[in-house]
Image 1: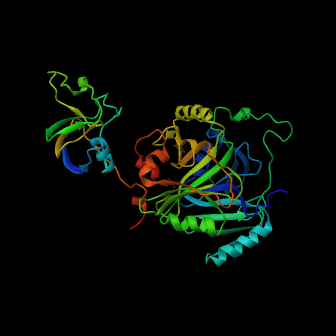
Image 2: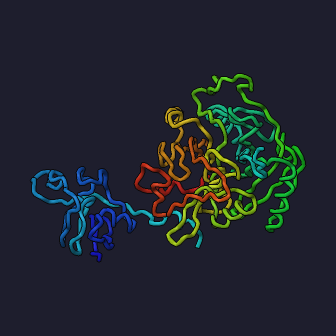
Image 3: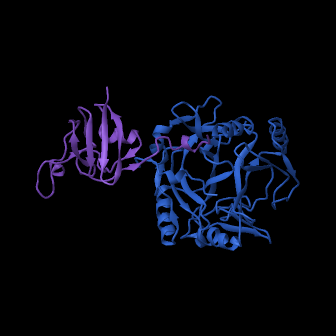
Amino acid sequence: MTYQVKLQHTGQPSVTFQCRPDQTILQAAYDNGYLLSSTCLRGGCGACRAQLIEGAVAELAPMSRFHCQDPVSGEFKYRLLCVASVASDVVIETDRPWQTRRKNPLSDRLPG
Amino acid sequence: MGLKHRGILRIAYVRLGLNDNRLTQSLNFYRDRFGMLESMRDSERAYLRCWHETFQYNLVLEQTAENQLIEIGFHLRDEEDLDQLTDKIEAAGIEVEQSPANEPLKGMGRSIAFTIPGGQRLRLFADMAQSGYVTGFESPDWVTPRELRGTAAPMFLNHVGLTSADPGATIDFLANVLGFGLSEKIVSEDGKTLSGLLFRMCRDVGGQELAIFPGEDGHLHHIAFTKEDPNDILIIGQYLREDGINIDAYGPTKQSYGNTFSLHFFDDMGIRLELCCGGRNIDAHPESEPIIWTESELARALSYYDSDVNPGFLDHSL
């Protein structure tokens, strides 16, 4: 079973891909050729934080509550995609732009 | 009772052609800053060797109309091997050019040259003049010669990386016709060979003399030289940086593919060089099997500490 993830970020065309409930949204994005900002990969540093616009996410591991808060208002605003998975189809606004990556960088070098 | 190994014994040299009076510029780099020794020089060419090398040259630089990889030289055991390999290469439908001793390069016995399926030219020979160790053979001081300290001072030519539009066919030729062993390879999800590391068919320390990567035919990906250990490479990386050398996309790293500790950087002409140490010790039993990496593990294969591939690293450099 998979759910659809739609990623958006201001100034960047949105992208969609499928994510399984047993993998993180960050990993599903990577597997589909999108390299999201990330550092610790343990729900701690907040480099991968994003807002959930629609749908529901599941936490595969605890998230730093500090990094889920809006730095000014303190409201619970962000999810950390390195430990978040999908509980439904979701629309997510990332805090930072993502990069595209080649899924098969060696195969792509073969002619034809 | 020694092992009666025949055929290719060692990678001997890389011969590069450089345009626009770059001979002086390249000598300035390879001799004065990279730390190779100038063995011979004539009006056309400069011959350089690593300080731990006993034969006369590992790198030949000459002036050509365009920058190019001219050829890679491999040293055979004897003349009988040269004749046998000539027959095998011709039987594979590849044209073989015969050259007399001292042509085109000095200090070499008679040789053959041919183009492999990937488009690069190789030269095979059985005899090359020896210079002997810089340290001498008698009770040597096995330390970097005083005059080379502070440079990269590579010990040996280690391996050469090439690009090929059909890596599988190139690897098959090198293994089946020239007798290289395959120590490692990278395959796509559907099993197609994308890259391979080839070693000469005897017990091997380092595990590779040629590395084949996918890309345009006929190009050079990198030239790798041997250093003693990672500590050496880390310190030399600082000297290179101090000297304004451009370090490649990965910094010093463990390359799981081949299991070396490596640093890649660019010479003054934009050619990618590698300093490496370690590498897999291969026991070339006929039944030994290559390590196989899948493309999905490429990031871990190329740099163990990195979580994604630096695409620029896959570009050829000459």
